[in-house]
Image (cartoon, rainbow, N blue to C red; front, side):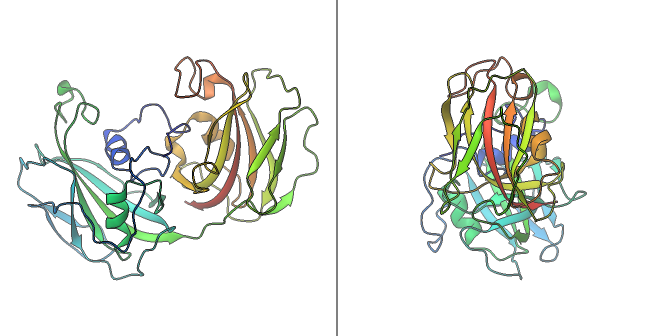
Length: 324
């Protein structure tokens, strides 16, 4: 499934890493198995020892005795949702909290901010979690047990987590976001002639690119190809996109959502590389944007899968939805 090529190489918060590990922060996360039918009963075991009080769609009050042992990924519906039933393809806005199961400490929460709209129920998610979420109604609060590992733990000197600590992530499903299937809007007429030329399949919207002998001067480029009429994307909000990315020096395609089942990707803009943050913030839903991202605004000297160190990257991004 998708690799996280537009996400920051390391998240600033432990909570982000925990959620990414279970496929809940970005549909771009490498989530393992393809999703099975959402109508099947969830196969995850029940998370025991965690409960909550509160109302559907509101911040829950979480109860558990620490230390709580979590040996495998698991879940429990703490509060049933009273809103609309979710279905495959929905992009969901949610709030979450993360607790250290050993210490009982709450280590992160989004409840003071606007909901995060970065979760699309599709085949890019881990099958187990997609089954759990697709069986819920809006307003539900679900706890996910996350076993400890070296990757998901901070250093023992942090005072928050020790290597191997397990965690409890509590997600409350708030609303859904309407999304497009491809960029829709007005083609921009005054695109500079020296830029790569982008064309899109009239049926699917899949872009192709003629690099037009383009040579980077080291500057960042964000050129709107199609101007959509939807709401503007906030720098602190979330986006739903389809995109293709190339390494400029080799002209090689390293990732494309169209090649991965033509599915969408959804993520919080603040958790992407700087080039995506700067290039998509302020753009409108329905737009198609050409991004040329110098190394300093991408991955710098850190090589990624399919991306050599110090690469200038070229992306064509269709903005299909947003949550602010």
